[in-house]
Structures are given as structure tokens and as C-alpha cells.
Image 1 (cartoon, rainbow, N blue to C red):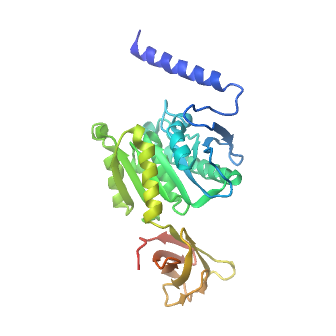
Image 2: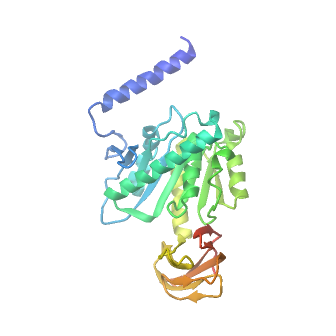
Image 3: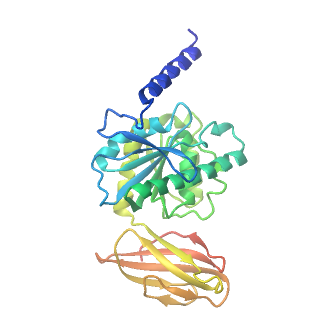
Length: 339
């Protein structure tokens, strides 16, 4: 038999078996874990996604959430989430795998068309997270995004554009085109770490891992590297997430004008993954404040460096800085440092 025809017949049999197994069912069974994988449709955009919730789930606790971005065919949301279910069960993770359009034939696609699909998948992923949060208790400071192969551009694009949502990004065996990051490099937050794992054969197939690492470093990202194949990718990513949570508290600043008639007046708020005890704000124009959520009025438009120093209950302190464009209200993150 022709090898190509044999390959098509084999995958056809797999698909038929999967349909037969799931016909009339509202869930997928993974024999390696006690709970089923649940299919859902988020109501805002009608996007399909799969969710695994571990048997130890307790709604009174805040749970980590990992968003998994699948690659091109024959990969799929079902194939990807099955690589995570045992880890999710053992480590206590909610794992969600949305159905995406941007990984499909991504190497052959015009840049503008691909960017349009990436933006649409970004909307789907954000809507999926909102829907998961509506029915589950998700930790505000432990949401992560992971991409495998053709899904790495999706994970990186969405993760970099939403640094206050995603604590960290992980990419396994990346397929990378810098042009697909054209609207993700503006305002990159160097406080958000990115973990890239490549297989030994990556350099033979185009060195996409090296290209992605070079691009991330050029744009000031906190990038870390590892090696390993697809079967280790989920475990390596979870180990990376755990290290980030232990060693790098999440701190971010929000700023907005509470009264449209006063465009030079801004309200500041701080998000922090540790319990804050004291605050010290500087607003870039000589003004300071010790309160948690200060309001500050600027004399004139301009760009100002905002810095918040937070003392935690254990006696440590964290420092976070952003540049604020007044009155536009646009924030540009800068590297967080210890004071």
C-alpha cells in the first residue's frame, strides 16, 4: 500500500474511533485519570474548549489555570489536554484547551491574515478564561499559557499582549515567525518570564527555538531555555511555573482617569501576589503617596515614571515601575527590581 494512503487510512480510523467513542456523550474519558475531560462552548463568541478539573477540586480554594494551545493537524485540543491530565490531577491544576484557528497552515499564511487569526484566537482565549472563571475558582495570580509547536505563536502572541493576566508563558518545540509578533512587541513586560524548550533536532528543522529566544531577548523579555521533547513538555512547563511562583512575586500597576472631565487626574491601583503591608508611590513629577490606591493630579501632559514599593508581611519588599502617558493613560511596563 502507498505509504501516504496508509497514513491517511490510519488517521481516518483514529478519527472514526474517537467519534464512535464520543457520540452521544458530553465528556471525553481519559483512562489515566479519575475525572472526565469536559467539552464546553463559551457563550460570548461560541468557541469550543476542553476542560480538565482534578478530582481534588474544591471551590473554596483558588486554583491555578493553564491554557494549552494546540498545534496543527494531527494535533488537536483533545491530544494536547491528554498530555496534561495526569499532571493536572497530581499537581492540582485546571487545564483548558480551546479550539484555535491560527495554528492551521500557519507557515503558509500571509502575515496580515495570520495576525487577524491570532487576534481572533486571543478573543476566544480571553472569553474562555472568563467562562471558566464564571464556574470555577481560579487564582488571580496563577494563570499560565502554554503553546506546543504550531501553537507557540498563538501562546506567545496572546501571553505577551496580556501580561497582567498571564503570570508566565511556556513554549515547547516552537514554530516561530517574527512577523506574527508584529502587534505583540509593543509594551512587552520584562517582568513576565517566558520558558522555551527545544528538541535536539530543532536546529536541523530551522532552529525555530533559537530564533524565538533571540527575538525575545532582543525585545527585553525575561526568557529562559530548556531542552526536551514533546513528552516532557508539560512536566517541564509545570516545574517552570512552580519556580516562578516561588521566586518571583507578581506585581503590576493599573492607572485610569476616574473622571473624564479631569484628564490629568489618575487613580492608581496595585495588583500583588503577596500580602502587602505598606506602600510607597512616586508619580514621576515629584509627588509621592503612602496609601494603597492613591489619586494624583498632574500639572501638564507628558510621560511619567510611576514606581510603587510594596513591603510585605514577611518584612520583604518589591518594587514595580511603569511609564504613564498623560492624559492618554497608556502604560508601558519596565523591569521590576528589588529596592
